[in-house]
Image 1: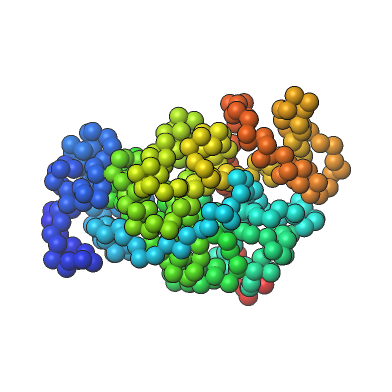
Image 2: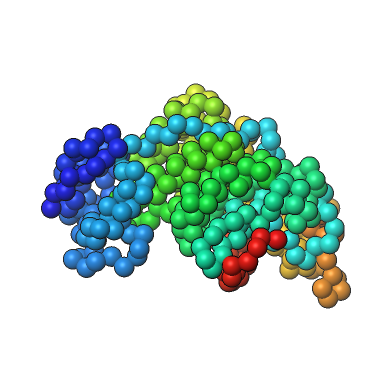
Amino acid sequence: MNVLVQAPESRTRQVGLLPKDCASCPLLIPCGGHPLEIIRTIGCASFANGELPRDNNDMNPLDEDRYWRLWDDVDGLFDFSISKITPIVSLDLPVYVPLLQHRYSRAAILSAEIVALHLHQIFRKYSDGRYIARFADAAQLRAYYRLRPDAKIILSGVAIDRRLETFWAAHRKYDVPGQLARLGITGVTAPNFSFFTDVTRYQILRNRKRILLVTERLSEAGIPVAPHLNAITDQDWDGCEEMLRDHPATAVVALEFQTGWSTLAEGRAALDRVAGLQQRLGRLIHPILVGGAKHYLDAQALFSRFTILDSRPFMEAQARRVLTANAAGGFSWTRARTDDWAPIDGLLETNLALYPAKLNQPFRQEEAAVVDAGQMELFDSTPYLTAQPVA
């Protein structure tokens, strides 16, 4: 089946929707081919075995109407260049940034100079579809989370797919970049639209394009952004390099180690890839490792500047555990005796003070008792709110 594609750079490009293999696919250059040999031989669309895809976000040409709707949604899959990246300043980031899961269980103003919050939690989705920031300005945001008035805030775009799809559907219609611009944000890590091996490469290319488009749109609103690096194949990594080469002022990038690259071996291989980009580009790269505490020593050996972003100190304080140093210079999480419903401010401050030193110790597998992936959706059961004025 051949269909006339109205691609942005050419209104007369002929594309075969169901190529017989990767070699005959017109998107082979940006794609590089599927990592599974059998799919390279039979073509991406053969995933569905003749059945229509069920996922509304599955860019499978067996559902032709949906395929072209998703194609048009990102202006096609031939051009992955973007006009602008407003970079996060590397010197604004310390080696550790605590991710706060919520504002509760605390009564005092947090002393931290910089914190991370979930991007999706900044917004409220109403039952009528509106997607509106919960805060009118920078002061209201910091007061809500009990932060210092001068606290720097990084917004983490890492989330489960449902949250990401809600963000994508709303970010243009409700001018999400413009809403964020009034909140005094130090930076945003671009949403981590998923790269799965069990979907067509069309969908992976679309998700790569969506990461770039959100990066561009936030940047155009003056918001500093760390582009999210996601890759499965050599060609995916080439795309990351191309993006960084096109934007030489960009040093700070984000990688996620909670659901992707979750094993030690996968994570180390990804860091080696980024270090390779650094060498080929001839300039320093500053990675933000979301959920990457176990790779602290690896990153220390590869990068002159890097940042760990996770919620371990917060989660442990929430569970009434405090980080304790022993005489030998080691650290352990110990149970703290507190009154029922007592605020966790003291525990959290202690954990935050000691955690950077603990990161500098070799990772022990038993430390993985707190599941990183669970941090993203610890409080994900809040229902969407009915339409009402924004407080």
